[in-house]
Amino acid sequence: MTKGVNSAPTKASLSPNKVSTKDPSILEKKQSEVSALNSNLKEASTTNAHITVLLDEAVHALAIKPEGVYIDATFGRGGHSKKILEKLGSKGQLIAFDRDLKAIESSKGINDVRFTMVHSHFAGMQAQLAEMGVLRVDGILLDLGISSPQIDEASRGFSFRYDAPLDMRMDQSGGQTAADFLANTTEQILAEVIKNYGEERFAKQIARAVIAERNDGRAITTTGQLAKVVAGAVTRFEPGQNPATRTFQALRIHVNQELEELALIMPQCLALLAPQGRLAVISFHSLEDRIVKQFVRDQANRDDLPANFPVRAAELPQPKLKGVGKAIKPSCQEVKSNPRSRSAVLRVAERTSVA
Ligand SMILES: C[S@@+](CC[C@H](N)C(=O)[O-])C[C@H]1O[C@@H](n2cnc3c(N)ncnc32)[C@H](O)[C@@H]1O
Image 1: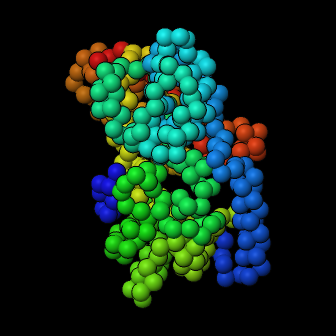
Image 2: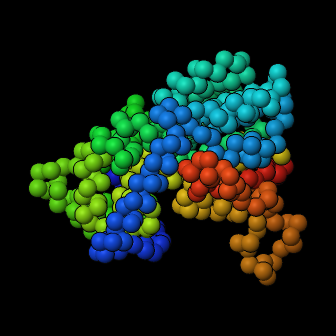
Image 3: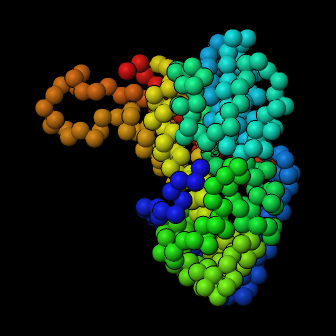
C-alpha cells in the first residue's frame, strides 16, 4: 500500500490544548502524569498481547446466525474472531483480514475449517472475497486502528516511548515508512498532515522544526529524534499526554492511509451485506467515527432531500441501511482494566432488503 502517501489530507478541526509548558511546576506535574499513564499502558499489555475492546458488545451487535458468513476485517490477535467462531455452527464461516504479517502469523494458532485468514488491506476486501466466490456476507466487523503488539513492539516504530527506527507501517511487506515520508515531504504537506490527522494546533511549528532538522543534515529517522523535535516545538499540550502524541497519531494515520481505507471499505460493506446483515465498527478517534457516522446516516436517511421535493415518500429511493441503537462505549470497568479502550466507540448498522 504505497499509493498517495505524499498527498495532503483535507480538513481539520482543532481542539483546545490546555497545559502551558512555560510554567515549570505545571510541566513537572504533567510529566509525572504522563509517566503514570505510560506505566498504566505498559501494564495493560505485553509485547504480543492485545486486550480485545468491546468484545461482547461487538460480537453481540453482529446478531450471529449460526450458519452465516462473517468477516473480521481487522483480525489483530483474533479476540473478536475467536468469539465469533464460538457462536457459529458447523456450517458457519469466518473470513478474517489483516495487513500485518504478525497478525497473519498469530492466526495460524486457529485450527478451524470454518476459518480463513487473508493477508490484505481491507479496502481490497470485496475483490478478495469475489476471488473466493463470496459475494454476500451476514456480518462485518471493523475494529479500527492499531493493536497493542504493534504499539508495544519497539521495532515497529509506532511509539514515542521507545527509541527505534521510525517505521509505523502496519504492513511491513511494502510501502513507505514514516521516516521515508519525513525525508521526502514538504513543510506545507507535513503541517497539513499533522494538523488534519493529529488535530495538533502546533502543526506548523512542528513541521518547520522537522524540516529545519532535515535541512541541517539531521534527517529524522528514529522515534526518539522525532519525539524530541516535537517536544521542542510544542509549547502547550493536554494533561496526561506526551507532547508528541498527536504528531505520532497523524503520521501513523497518513503512512497507513487509515482514513482513505475506511472511506473505501464502507461502500463495500454495503454491497456485501445480505439483507439483515450487520455492520459493527469500533473506532478510536473522532476522525474515524465521523466517517462511519456520516456513511450510516447518508445510507439510512433521506434527509438530504428538500422538504418540498415534488415526489411522494414511497417513490424516493429507500434506505439501504438502518442504524441499530446508539453508539456504544466501553464501561468504566473495561476502561479501568484496559485504559487503551477509553476512546473506543462502537456503531452498528443493519442492511435493509433494498437492492
Ligand atoms: C485494533 S486491532 C484489532 C484487534 C482485534 N479485534 C483483536 O481482538 O485482536 C486492528 C488490527 O487491524 C489491522 N488493520 C488496521 N487497518 C487495516 C486495514 N486497512 N486493512 C487491514 N488490516 C488493518 C491492524 O494491522 C491491526 O492488526
